[in-house]
Image (cartoon, rainbow, N blue to C red; front, side):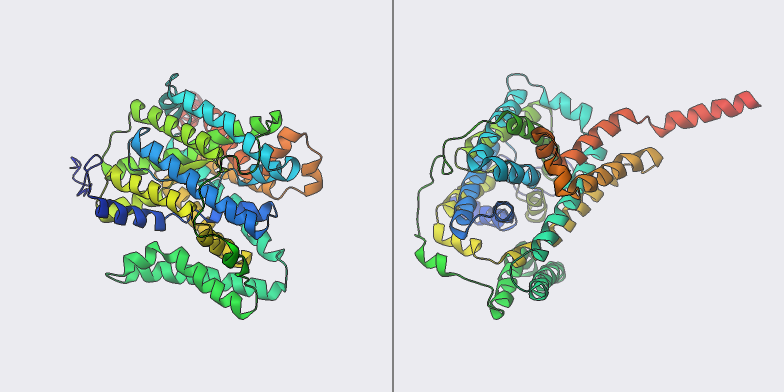
Length: 448
């Protein structure tokens, strides 16, 4: 039970649940995650066909499930669900396009091990977070993630095959449905919570129905897909380790670590758990090993999903066993190719219409974190300049981008990485306003 009067936790972190309770609550967490959007967006950026997109989704589910079992079971040992991060999308797309999927997967492995080693045996992660990732940096990075991904969603709508007018209408309907279901879920009693949890699924279904009226849906690959398939090791071939790609992803992993730190603090707050160095270092091990093992199944880097902290706050159930059940559900879903092909057949315009709204929510969650800090002149620069630099990287002309050296190309392809790095550096080098005010007062005293 919780000791903090502000936390209304009915079931504690280590409290056991029976199998039915665990799986019902675990399914609720899975429904809230929307983790199929990341592999679909990445598959679109890599121009993969429906079959390969479905495989990508399968591998992502399995990797997220494995990472969740590791994190909740033996890593951080908190109720943290793991899912694919949006942060590496740009860099992975650039590497996959230029070097192939084998190099893309190979670039993921060394960085994951480095993150794990930072937790144990080095035990440095706790100190790194305290020194370099205060709330203003963590919040800014979340804002940057949302803003950097918005152009990806919009461009994918504008450049989709078919009529631009129809594509725009389908995307608008999908986005409007998501907004409608979210608002409806907050207004209704009883079923309102389910509607809110399933709002993305309902919006995708409604958007797909609208797209079918315009002849933009083809579900023929679903009939050919088997119902059950065991996960494959290295489905995209033997990993290839390109130095520049590996170096880029090592840096990206640190950005993902900033992102996931915000989730850890959110989960700790709703469960009244102490987020000490032991838990932080355990979290690094869980995240690193989860990403490393997931990459063998073709999964992309995972992060803690903050939406699940909201589920814990709503239900009052903070048991790790519900999260472990959620991890098992993810693995099972990843072994149902027919279901994954259904998801892969959702038109890109529908996905990106919904994705655009998701980007807005991500950015606003970042502002929610930043508002804990006083936005004086100094802090406005720490928050604002990374947004500017993120847009500068995201909107950089392709000719200029491709003329850069490979490492810089991969790095700048991720506007998120540019924004995150600048947030950390600016927070370290810009002096606090208090010091400036003190110096001004001294100057006025001397004049007198």
